[in-house]
Structure formats: structure tokens, C-alpha cells
Length: 458
Image (tube, rainbow, N blue to C red; front, side):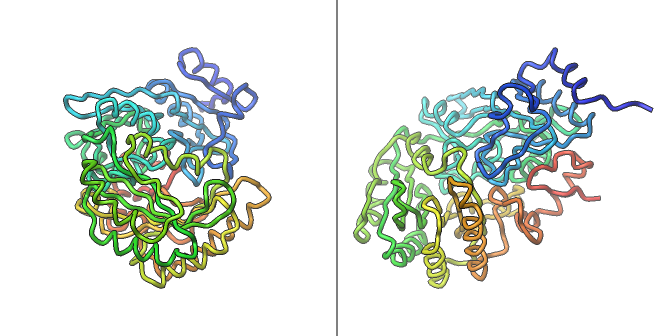
């Protein structure tokens, strides 16, 4: 009978060839390395494998499999449910894998799994190129892309995953595979929406598009007592937008920490500055805003515009669903709930889907949400642990009160760790069965399950 090696023996054996860092709980740097973006998450991996290259990832996967340890994969570490880390298992940390190569002649970029949107945009914008990325620039490209990829450019160019040309993965067996429309095509379909269920994504190849260097965007905010009028205007205005125009709305707090509640609209127009100047006039002319920061700006500035509202270490608890319709009653429900928000960092956000993101077939990728409409995000965020119970309670109560207005679908990247029912089935809808079949082919033992887990079909 073969004995299972101890973690110490396995780490010592691996350390001689591992080019990154292997951190155990008593090592210097472990405490900082184990933290993810959400300060509410407090897990302690048995080992953090800070990989520098694909060979390191392969070795970390093999070590975890041989020791029968759970594995979590960290790209940017932003997942609100804390699925980038694990108690008592192995965190495969890709943050040191920052390689980016942009080919302006083919308008493509290949980026490694530890790259953030700030990193990628900085390189692609040297050539006035971009791909749909997250609205918070510190978010990692990996998790956002694999689960969907909402962003400022999705009306014109689709979601982040719609712009993938290929993905390199390390499988549960420690094999390195490349998947694209011509290679491992079933796997390529699955990773475009299926999250981290099929392997560790070590690099992504994106199709880029001409964007910037200057676009038109920003925020306009109104007093909270005008919220009903603002959200109705937003609903009517988004009923007919050009593809170049992305417009989101929300009930937010003033960024000065005063707790002042506001109704805000944020936008990006990626067309010509002349066309954008005309297009944004209704936003600027509506009502009597207390803040109007819409105008020409570098695309990278727009992508970092909201970063300060989501500091690393803040405590976060989110709930989210697509709305069936943004009715007057739904708007009134949002306003009543937000009036009771106990934290000056809390928000209720409406992310509008239209354009190119909705012109892709439901079954063309694993991501099924292809209809015009709105995703509602109940975002509770706070700094003091003493406020945790009431901030979580507000988010849960708000979500419960908004349930009469939501549709069946869920955005997988926003799912929490305490969901009821079968949220994964809701996230994938008609694509769920096929995803389970592909999961059974590539990861039949469900080795990669510390994620928004798709159970393999047995």
C-alpha cells in the first residue's frame, strides 16, 4: 500500500524546482498573501502556491491532487464569495503571472491569469485598442472573463468572454491544453461562461478593438428625493441606445463618506467624441444634477473611475438577479429599500444589457443571458466588523423584497456563498446540462469545486 506523503515532505520536494513562492502558515508573507479583496472572507489555506509560470501551476495542481487537498484558484482575488481561497487546502495564486503581449497588427492580446484590467488596458491603450473589461480596474481578467465579463464596451463588442480567441488551461490531471474554436471546441464553449470549473486558466487570448485613447464617459448624480424620476428616465432612455453607448444607474452614497444618498447614472460612449457629445446631452440636461462629471476622458481613466468605491479589505456582501422588467413598482421598491441602507458604502445598481452582448445565441457560449434588460445588484459594503450583522441583514431583506420583480436568471460572477435553491442551474439555464456533461469529461472527480460549482454528470 502506497503511503500518502506529508505536506511538509511534498513542499520540500517541490521547493527545489518551483520558481514562485510556496507559503505555509508560519512563513513570512503568508498573512498578507492569504487575504482576498473582500475583507469578510477570512480563510487559511494550508499552502499558498504563488506561481510564476505554467510549470508552477502544473506542479501545484499535482501536489494538491496527490495529497487529496482542496484547491482554490486566485487570479485577481475579487470574487465576493471568497472562492479564490480555501480553508486547509491549496491556494493556487496567479498574481505573479502578469505577462501581456499585444499584437497591434492582428489586434489581439495574450495575457496571463494574474493580470488585472488596469494592467491589460494600460498595454492595449498604447495602441488605442481595448476589449470589454470590468468596470473596476483592480478586478482580475480571469474570473471576470470566465464567468461572463460585463463592462463599458459590451454594447458594441459583447462581453469579455465573447472576445476570447483561445484559453490555455491546466487540467485536474496536470495537463496543459489550449482551447479555441478549432481546438477542444467543447471545452472552449464551456469556459466562455463556465467559470473555473474546467481547469486553471493560465492565459487568455483576446480580440481587441479600436477604442480611445479618449472616450466620453463619467457620472451624473441627483438628490435622492429625485430618485424615482431619475430611474424612470434611465429606464426610458435605455430603451433605445446605440451599441456604442453603455448606461448604468444606481442608488449610491456620496463618495465623501457623509452618508448622503444620491441617484446616479454612469456611462461610457466609445464612439467618436462628436457623436458622443450629442448622445450624452439628454443625460446632462435631465433635471438639476448635483454633480455632472460626464465628458471626454482617457479610456483607462474611465475604467478606474469607480475603483475608490471598492477598496481592498472592505467587507462585502452582495445579492443579485436579473429583473424581468424595470417597472414603476420595482423602482419604488428599490427606493424604499435603499432609504433603509445602514452603510454609507451601500449601493443598489442596475446594469443594462443591450447591443452586441444580446445578439449572440443563448447556446453559442455557456453564458446564456442574452436578452435586453437589467441586472440588479444589491451591494452591501462596510468597513467596521461591528456593523456586519445589520449590513448583511439589509442586503438579504432588500433582495427578498425585490424578488417579486426578478427573472429566473442569475449572473454567476455575483453569486454569494450562502445561496438557497439551485443558483448554478439558474445561472446557466438551458446550458446547464451540457456544462455538466463537459465537466464530467474534463473533471469527472470534481477536483475543481471551490468555485461556482458545476457538478459533473454521473
